[in-house]
Each structure stands twice: as C-alpha cells, then as structure tokens.
Image 1 (cartoon, helix red, strand yellow):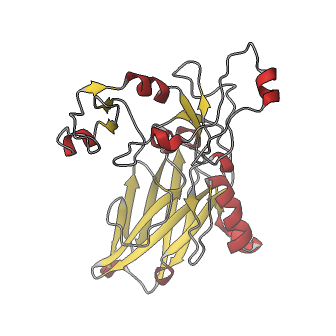
Image 2 (tube, rainbow, N blue to C red):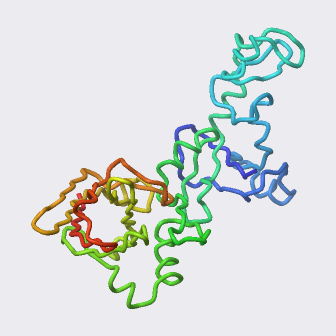
Image 3 (cartoon, helix red, strand yellow):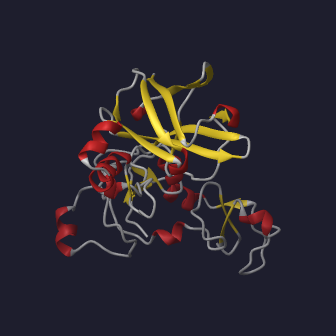
Length: 288
C-alpha cells in the first residue's frame, strides 16, 4: 500500500505534487493544516488506494470502469468473465461506465516503487508498470552465487566490486568500450564478470557446455533504458588457424543473470576446436 497525490491536471507525472508516506492509509488534514491551506486548492491527500482496485480481481482499476444500477463496480476485464452480471446484486454490469471513478483515477499520482533507490518520478495509478519497465532505477540482482543483494544497476556495480572482488581482480576486470581486449575463462566456471567503470556497468560473459560444443554469450546487467545507452559486441575465438567469429547487433539487458543454457544471441564453439577447459577469446564491445 502506498501514498497518493491528487493531481490538479491529468497528464503530469512530475512537478511539485507532494508524495506522502509509503503506507496506504486513511487520513485527514490536521486543524493547523486546514488553517494553513485555507483559500488554497488542496492538491494532496492520503487515501486508501485499495478502493481504486477492482473488488472482483483485486487488480488496479484502469479505464473504462463499469457499474451496475446499484453502483457496484467492475473492471473491463471482469465484466465478460461475469457474463455482465453483478456478483453482488445480480443486476447487469458492463454497459454503464462510472465516469466519476474514472475521473478520480485519472488524477491519482503515486511514487515509483523504486523511489527508495532514487527514482523521483510520480506515475498515475494503474500505469505504474509502464513506467517501471523503463525506470533507470529498476532493481537488478547480484550475479554472484548465493548472494541475494538487489539494487539499482549503479549501486549493484559498487556492491559487486566491494563485496565480491579484491583490487587485483577488479583491475583485471575493467575495460573500455570501443576497444578490443582478451578474455580468458574456464569453461567450468561458467561466468566471467567484466566492468565498464566509466558507466558503472557490469557485463556477464557466460559459457554453457553442451554435447556438441560450448555456447558463449554476453549480457549487460542493467535495465533497458535510453539513459544507459546501446551496445553491440564482436566475439572471436581462434585456435590452430581456425576461427569462430560472432557479431551481435545488441547486447541483451538483464535484471538477473540466467544460468540456464542460452542458445539465443550466442556463439557456438564446436568440440573439435576446444583445447582443454580454458577459453581465450577476443571481445569488442561497442557503444552506440
């Protein structure tokens, strides 16, 4: 449950609206607040945001909202499932819209769920997921095994360096975009982290042993947002005069590293070109 702000005009997700405590609760202004705000338009209040959830599916209301003749509400998704019959009074529902509730809904602003991580955006109730998919402060998970730390990608970068690397390993893990470098990894270790210090980004190079060879893939542990930029990569493996080259038009972004075999966006090194457990490859990550 979260606090809400009432917006004077719809369409504004930012501004001077005050976002109140993170617990949804019913509250009223104190006498002193009423005095201070006398003659002013009251733009902020606390309310129980659960009243803005469909009472049937308990999901956040989005327009259109329907009501029966007795005023019982239902969301557009629930009406067909109910065969347009109100579950409370059995009157028809799904034909008459509740314009008053729709107006209230379009004026409610709530903080992004990543506010504690630094996001200052306010979003309209029911539209949170649209913003959170593009939020630069979206939570990412630490790639270290048995570590359950999550935070924004920049905080995660610092956590990983401080907690899971010593200075020698950190120095060897650093690279710069648009410059090729050599990576050496043991197939049995399955993952190698490389750090781009200019942008505080972590890139995970993973290998997956399969019966017919080893798949190698690269991902960036960060949300897919324009602020971070776009990256492509070029990966090559050479042995005994034979070369395997892979070019990817874009480095995939992940909030959490997946340790299951990935066949997409990956390079296959066949068994015939493997020489023991060690892989030595050349990697070039380009920033667009």
